[in-house]
Each structure stands twice: as structure tokens, then as C-alpha cells.
Image (cartoon, rainbow, N blue to C red):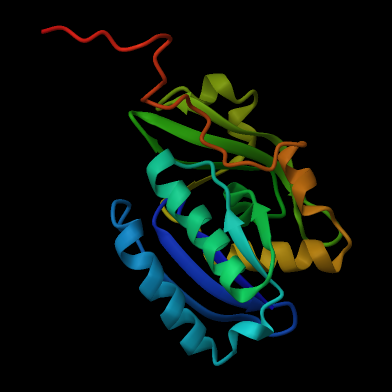
Amino acid sequence: MLLAIDTSAGTSVAVVDLDGGILAELSSDDTRRHTEVIGSLIAACIADSGITVSALSGVVAGMGPGPFTGLRVGIAAARVFAVGAGTKVIPAVSHDAIAFGCTEPTLVATDARRREVYWSTYSGSDAAGLPIRTSGPNLAKVGELDTAVHGFADYRLVEAATVSAGALGMLVETMLANGRDVESSFDGHPGALYLRSPDVTMSNGPKRVTT
């Protein structure tokens, strides 16, 4: 049984079980109030599911792609909750949750703001029903997907405004049940997928002070 958290778009929290499916899921579409709602959504979702925290075997954290500010709220919440619950954090690619269940070539696109989109392509699903990612996650300018993605017309376009934590949790439950290494989906880099450099960087030298 897993608690799943994703803040790559809005804020979504779910409790899932391999056999029972999505036991509870609560979400907020607001892309600017992750910090304000994450705690209450987790508490309400646990209560709605009727389970005890000790019953959880892990906390799934959606690692993006997503904007830095919102994405880190969900990752931090997952880590803190896992420490308190005495369990582990399992990172997962948010785009894979959107493509979970796809059976045909699919292009997933989510809002990256600044007139850009995050995108990933999938050839369909494998025998376990897990999405087969063939490219991405990547970043492109709005209107340039047809150039960035070779053979764009051959894909079913899924433009997602939110990511379901329920789908994210069931994705991981399915991967674990089929003996898959979840971290392998990050190509060896199971970190947050910001896909752009931070706006603020460290200076190269001491700050000059004038009087």
C-alpha cells in the first residue's frame, strides 16, 4: 500500500493498493498553492482511505518534469512524511503516470510555463501494462513540438493539465509487482526533473560593497 504525491502541475495525493486500486485521491488544480494545500490533502486522503499510516509500505514522489517551485514542495513533503512514517520514498516520473494504460504511440505534453512545454513519447504498453517511454522527458517551445518530435503526426497527443497521484501510485505498484527497478526509469539519474537551469545562481566571487 502506497501514499503517492505529485505537485508537477497542480497538487494531487492518493493512497493506492495493488489489489484494491485507488483507495482515496484528492487534488487541487491550483498551480501556485502547493505549500498551502499539501498538508491538508495528505491528512484528508489518509482519513478517507481508512488506513493507518503504519500500513503504508512507501511514499511515491512524482519527480516531474515540472517547475522548480511547485515540484520541490511535493518531493519535500514525500520525504518528510516518509521519515515520520518510518518508510521509504520511491521516485517516479510524472509523465509515465499520464501515459499509464496507453496502448498506442502517445505524446504526453504538460505546461512548463514561459511559453514552453515538457514532453515525452511512448510507443505503447508492455505485457505488464506499463508505458514504454521512447523519448524524454524533454523541453520545447510552444508550437515547436512538431519539429522536436520526429513523426509527431503518428502520436496521440495527450495534453495534461494535472497529474493523477492515483495513477502515479498504481504505476509504481505495477512496476514493483512485476519486479521492475523503478529508478531505472530515470536512466540512472533518479532526481527531480526540472529540465531547465535555476533562475538564481551563485556568484563567482565575493560581493563588492560600496559606501
